[in-house]
Length: 404
Image (tube, rainbow, N blue to C red; front, side):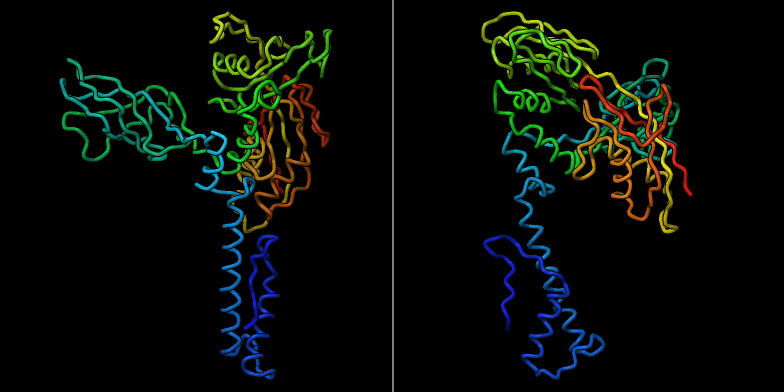
């Protein structure tokens, strides 16, 4: 029997299936004679094909397992373990919540976990605290979606009491839309990006350490950074910066946590700047010396992007317009492998958008992608530059798809 050890000191070898097939054929002929008929239509040919598929499956499985120690390829719980090495963890899923008005028999106690459904998608919500109907038989309480993710609940749609509801509880309704919309657990792609952005979390006094510390904060979705290490005021990438200072732009997150992180991570004596972005000025108390410091940073100006896509779709693909729109939104959010998405200061490339669409749906041929800012509206294939104090934003309503 030939040696087919594909694990070597150089790593996992994944040969072509045709090579494996030829190797198995050679083994059979060695065992049963060179004139053996190995055509797949024969019994022995069928056994050769089955053996080839079995070996291929083992090799692929070995390669996938080996990749789990590679931070850029790991998935699932093994990626979580790699994140834990630097004190990071993927963002957990969250749940939509909505305030609902209840009516029924006065004095009725409606316990925690009582369920109601919204009438559009029949998503189930449950109460998060007990409530007692007042003397008029009315009360309000918060309901939370049973399933995590971006579950919507439009006004006046949470109206169905789940069978087996509390005796004396007669109606439920939400006069307003969901107060918060849930999110899905952070994907493997986004978690890998988070890891790359927080590798320097344990460092101090460097640009990488400041950026990593900010990216680790809850709710932060983008960070921009510049520094002036000279003895004079300088204009750097359009930002006027005092001597020995930094300029930070942060999208998302809590103001106080951002100010505390910048102060903790920067080098002592380094100053702060506001720039052309949306100014923030936060006063904090330095925890060791007790000194009050005013920390300056910016929020990004959001630049709306108009996108026009012309494409041709395979008849086998259903809802190609929705697929294209969702692919573009995933591209912007950095949810596609190898594509960082639209961070602060990231230019908008029509070429990248077209590539993202074909990555998600190879059966869609993209003829052209044109982008523009709203004013002046001038769709073209040219890259749209985005300054360090800006962040491009793509909304589904700003994407037009023409199928040919």
